[in-house]
Image (cartoon, rainbow, N blue to C red; front, side, top):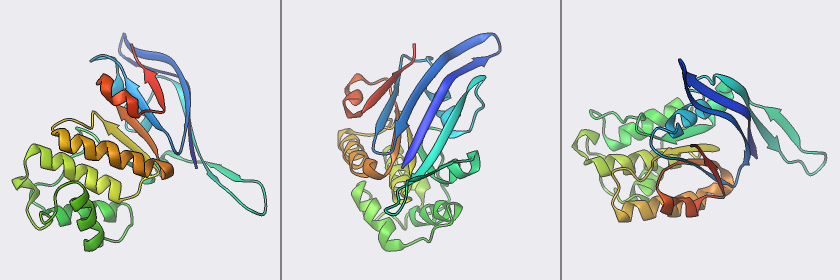
Length: 213
C-alpha cells in the first residue's frame, strides 16, 4: 500500500503565491481530486506531487507498506527516484511519439519502466479504450481524441501504483470519458489516483477532494 502525505506544502513563483499550508494524507484505493478555478495551481500541485517541480515550503512523504502474515507490516519511505518508477501520468505535458506506431509507443514506455512489451496485453488495452486494430498505425495519424485514449491505454497498461490524471477528459467525447471513469474505478484498488479537474461533475468519482482557491 502507498501512503502519500503532504505537510504545509506551499508554492510561490517570485512574489506570487500559488498555494500554502496544504496538508493531506492519501492511500492506495483512493481517488483524490485536486480542484479549483483556473489559475489556482492544480497542474502546479500535480507536478510537485510527481516530483517534477520543487515546493517552496513544506514536505512530501511517500511510504510503501508491505503486509506480512508472520510479523507486523513493513513500511519503507520511498526516494523520489523510487516514487517516479511507480508513477504514471496522463497530462497535457505527456507527449506521444508521432513517428512511432501505437505498439512502438507502448514498447518505448514499457522499456522506460523495465517492463516487457507484450502485443496481446497492449492490444487488450487499446481495445478497452476504443483503439482496437490501430496499434500498427503511426500515432501522427491519430486524432486528438485518439491520442488522449492512447495515453490512457499506455498508462493503465503499465499498472502504476500512483497515477496522476491532469484534466483527463480533455479532447475526449462522452464515450471516451465514460471509459476513463470506469477504468479508473477498476484499477484504484491497486493504485492511488490523483485527479486534477475543475469540472464539478467529475468530483463524484473522488474519495477525497483537495480544493485550491
